[in-house]
Length: 418
View 1 (tube, rainbow, N blue to C red):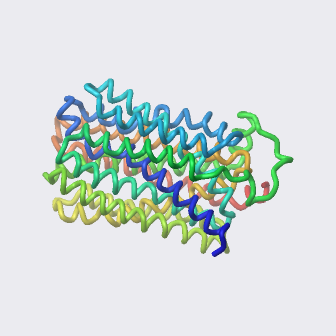
View 2 (tube, one colour):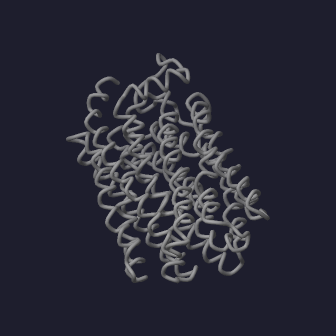
View 3 (tube, rainbow, N blue to C red):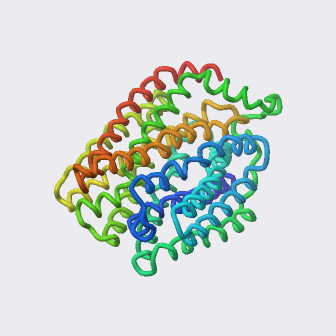
């Protein structure tokens, strides 16, 4: 492997580490929410706001203008600043004394993290050609399960020993140090170096980018499919620690270790398999980049049902691993399709639009609707209210399959227009 090849993998690893911190800082509230709920006297609806809509508010909307900047200016600098800012807000989350203060700090975390993925995706696309992007984005997407592993096990261990406030400090401060290190060790790549020169491509206006990307039906259906996939997964993932503790009476430490290992390792395996499956089969039939997300939705549905309806805590904990494997397989192919459909000056924006749907539909509405349904059903169902709220949200996976299928039917035709 030559020096150039080594460097692109080094950059990918560093970007993945940054994404690990991105997701860990986002996820720690989930494993801490039962303790926070008791300490600050919160309802499930408020928890849904904190882990869903409260986070997604700026993460979804601010990602668009930041992506536009990333398509024109230095992406490395934008990413370094964003990492430092969301890490600082994570530290400040540990200082919150009530729901409103915690909500403000989580909105701050989301504002910083809005500048994470779009610049990263654009940088990756300048190092990896189309035929390798499924694998590259799957490796990058491994930041999600590793972040969950870090967020659940490390955060759960620290919280069990020192409380939830110290946990925010322990994960936020290293992120600030990483931001400084990242600024000095990563260089901004030449934009478009993989796909040829781009001098003749003018900087598009906001309206032109929207019109160009959504004129491709496969891109619109891809966004909708990703949105309804995450509606289900954010609902279940964000409330899974609470569900296991309430329904099965499992203690925080046991939940942290089991969820961290199952989702972390399972997600790593699923992300890699999804990307490789798409790249290998996509060499012959490009529709496989959409077939893999379809398979991800269908196969993850069944272990999710087992988690929610088994009466055995051991079976519920065991089913989390296959659920994590199947659930993680969609990410790499989805991002690869989005980057391939966009020209070199629209790539960060393409990622931001996918995130707009994933977080506007999934993160903002999934946990919030699950929390509201749970509170509504609690008078009649007690602790089981969360089970049926999450089951209803799980049905969105079938909508996702439909939209991925529609995207696949238009993908090859849209590629010919590039």
